[in-house]
Length: 266
Ligand code: 13P
Image (cartoon, rainbow, N blue to C red; front, side, top):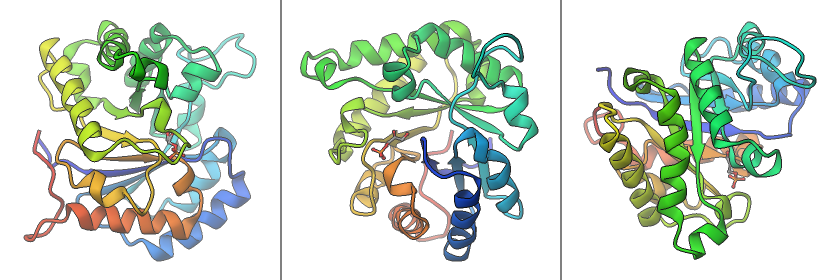
């Protein structure tokens, strides 16, 4: 198995059209050289995928993804965007089951499973998001919710498929609130996800990113935990200087004295 990669994923949500995406890329690239063992993922709005893929095409450490896709390749789904469409314009990844899709747009666990399966079948990497709401956390139901969300994905996939899945733990109460999970809390849920996948027969150590109010101030302490393979960031990824700083500080927190990044091998 190849060495694990430290992953910095930027989810721009409904921000940055094509012109802004290009301007971002120009500034960010000048500030952030490629580093061995580190990958940089960008999830722009669908209309900006082509522009960003083009602006970043010289960098093999950078990959572009969609924020959402339909599970069907085509058809009567007004407003929908298919995996072949985003692939055609340069996406090689897709977010699946982001909490904003689940909670604002009513996406179900079952749809998350279908999208994950469709992404894998089309040869792109799904970054599957799970996480509990504040009410679920306060009600002591975090574990139950995560296990339920994982269950729908497990039901849709075969165990070898998991070699190509990346997950993100994004507690809903931490998204855009400035209230991040503590490194210990995040590490504990990452362990829970891995235990549950292991219990269900997944033989691989699936990479798991943490998301929810990650910033240049907390990225180093979060990534100091070996359970975290990277971060998925909204607000703090919107500005090229700020995002370059998050990537730089986060990378330094995981750098090995011998070179490369300190990640557990799969
Ligand atoms: P914030 O980093 O703005 O909290 O958003 C997190 C997120 O939802 C990334 O997908």
